[in-house]
Image (cartoon, rainbow, N blue to C red; front, side, top):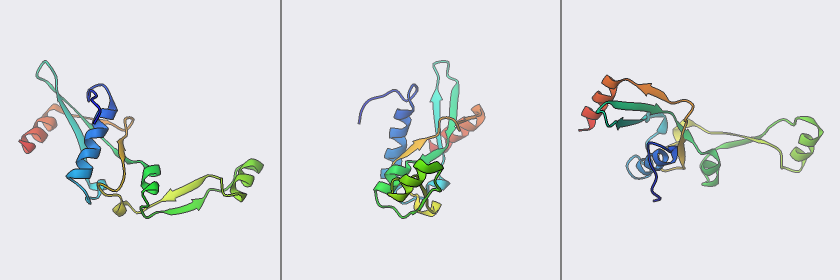
Length: 129
């Protein structure tokens, strides 16, 4: 696994996320999992962030997981021609119960991240101690 700073790059957190989902939570529905990163700063203060987990849809489909695929209605003549030859945009849908640890790659939604209070962060750390 390549080395990266988990404080400075989302990639490091995603490596941890995918490792845990593949090895420790294989088969667990991801919709019931929270990914909270707790950092202890040099000052001793805790900083915690709750990241939404997202599915890598391209990888999910490529691995042959169950999904429905439909053609997106064409926008203009170019879109209609692409649809006609099977190269138009597609819409993928799948049941959330099929999205489980180990079925695909996942990533963290950086825009949807929420802060976690110092007291909640302390409770989380005490729960895993």
